[in-house]
Image 1: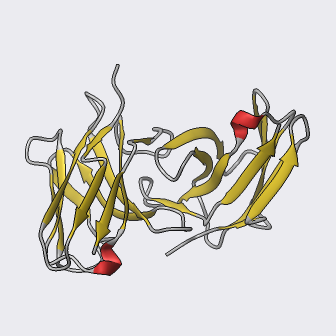
Image 2: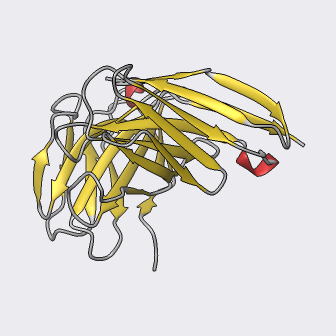
Length: 115
Length: 111
């Protein structure tokens, strides 16, 4: 079956604008994760959904960042008033359920550039 | 914040040689996983080793884990040009869902 997909693959925006990044997880996966990867760094955890609810949003850097998953499938990461420091690759992952032995499958990422 | 540190940061070898990458981490873990990333995009899961395991093999990959030293190593044998990528270790802690990644090792395999 299809893997995790993310759209758009690239997004260029201007400082102060609002952006939405979309993630389509693998069908049937109840757990969904967002990570952010800055240049030369490893991915850093942002938020974890189990079903429709955000079970842990402790990685969101500030209140400009928000994510939803209204029907327990597709998720949208929303960034308000973008800043140049938000430029990074945003990675989405899904797993069958929560748990250490449930592999997290990653999407190809969205490269966000804030000018 | 980054949990682990990979060593070396970059490694360049000839095709057919073995590549060894090391990872150190700071807190107790549930398991440790290694990922490969090509061209700074999608991560591919390579292998998972549980905290009560010491060594695991998968094809040309061999992973060791020393929880007393909070370290792991990834060995790729008989490397190929297609192995050129960045390799990350990631630890899973008590949360049982949050992966904490290191900064990665950039491996270049020259044909």
